[in-house]
Length: 434
Image: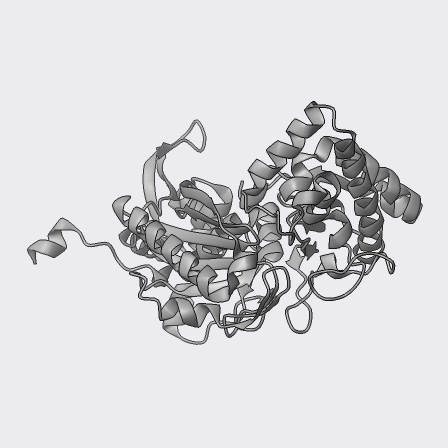
């Protein structure tokens, strides 16, 4: 069973979620009912028209009309007889199709750009990542590379017979989703970058809507809908990148804050005597647990920001660290233990504040989960209120470094589920003969 994204995206800043407004006219009522039927099939799997009528509260005639329209838009299809019991004729089952609908999600991070595209049913169509020095390239060169990545993905989707229904970009920073602006991304060195406006002006061959959102929020939603803790209504997701971001789900809702900037967990101050963070402050949590901190402890001569810093895909960097551990370098185990200790200390603050059931560790945290989690949980139990700590545990994500781009693709899927009329009717042979 899939788990739906919580509510419909509002037009306000990052992370603003709310229920759809009440229908006010016939077209809105029909759009709402189309969404109701499509979401039911998405959430509960193949079902008959009679089952749809029973569970949605719509009459059978209305359901038949709605199903016909969703089929004409290529969003659902019949898969064959469904036997509801031993008596009576079997009915035809309906399931998601959407094979001609492409949801494209991308991520720009410190040392890579990633792209994932899925169809409406969540099947992966494209999955790629390239090494790129976004930290050292500045917004102009980074956006040029992003445009090239999007262009290639759109071309590949066209070759696969799918049209983009939406293009969403994940960025590690403060995002104003209403204007499509990256307000501040400290680890990229970006301020007030009108990302969506730039994409619209770039001549990308698609009419799909563009959007930008915070990477950790999108990754948290990916975990909530399809990750190791799918369906857990109270969870915290930690990115485990060069910097550390967090997405907080409480009672099934993404916490966004008054301006949509909630979740900047990496910039909680944990060590007044620590090192300077990319945000300009001293002792932020990410300076203790981010990938940059691990690299600094294991290979200080090639730390981020030094003249020996080599731009590499994070998977390659982690493979090098693991090789050093296998070769007996004592700095690796010591560094991982240090990260685990500080991870537990910061997590204790989150548990005392938000009382989650699960803290999902993404990125490189998941890669070293077997070593990090026992140390972090010991520190968590030491610092938390006893009963609270005992009811919360860490889990290693299985989405790797693709969680944010997968969540970005999921946001585009959710838009289609919310408004099926955004997808055009398919052209049939009969249409061409008219």
